[in-house]
Image (cartoon, rainbow, N blue to C red; front, side, top):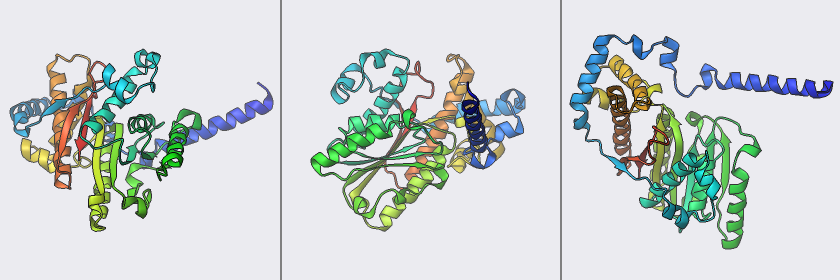
Length: 347
């Protein structure tokens, strides 16, 4: 390596290290890392806390009336109908197939509930979008008739994202059919985004499906997202154009154990149902990590899954309180692909 090349390489590395340091500083962490900062492990929990939580969760679980629908919508026939020639055979049997199947199933679940359609205006807002692979799948399912807003706090190199591919198909259809679909990417933390800044007033007056999607949204990034969504829904209602816009949320949740009683959206609901306090709720939330362990026959795994379902049920109830008539929890991918295999859907 030449001296000038080495110098440029080192400068690049320094910038990369500084960027990574900025990204993981406390100010930029979306989910407050309560358990990491306090160095608390489940193995250090007081035994009486574990015993109490096991008792109250198992005794009261049925009172939540949690119904988990199972819609694994990624079989060969579905792919042939909605994604013909989009994915090669090699892709569908390769290492990335589990991601493709998840993306297809998320789209198909949205389509099944008429949250998204290929014969009307779709505005797809992907939260924590990364390279925008899920948005690419939605665009294909919508037969390219969709606008896309891509939100992620990380910067992605052009070669690692699908923005250009989405934009090319979008522009082509705009020219062919005189549509006004658009693409926006914003490098911003979810807690700082303002949905109305991405959609102009003329577009708001059209008949739109406005759908918020993600695969997967960790910890209280879900809570931050729904607060922004609820705020935008109220804004639309205040402008008296609610009838022009149909809202939907379809988000794969994960990393529930990163939540705590302060960041979770509906702590009062859980505490009332289980008759526990804030501290006990914090302990309970940490047990959600058991829901992803390998031994799926163990009591710990079953308890961890119950905790995750309870937390997602609370999220559904919170969304109902804030303008969404229908909510559900759906198993959308087989657990052999990922144990984080449930969606929270609201519309």
